[in-house]
Image 1 (cartoon, one colour):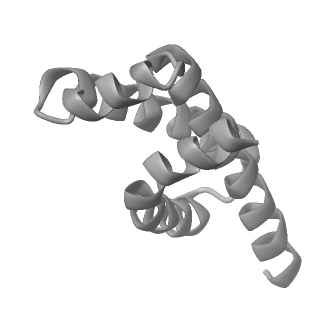
Image 2 (image 1 turned 45 degrees about the horizontal axis):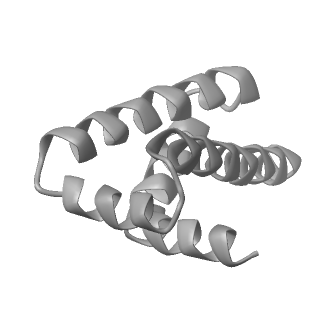
Amino acid sequence: MQRFLTILTFYRPFAVWSFVINIGLTIINPYIIPAVITKLFCTIFVCYLCNVTHAKRKLIFYNNLGISSLQLFTVLFIFDAAITIVFIEVIKEFI
């Protein structure tokens, strides 16, 4: 549970951007599969940015806690995809 909360701490700065992307995806194409694929590409892009920029120091911190980069971004993707699916399903009920 501690690891999951630590990973969510890493996700917190990206939560606003994720919500903005959710709104944009819902407006453009309110289907689950394209939204999840888009979130996968966004997660890969964030992984790339974290490995190339000064944010790599944050990854070293998580590596010292025993959380690999692959594990970190996999859990972030699963968590973000779950939020996206719930968001799209709720919005589809009102549209």
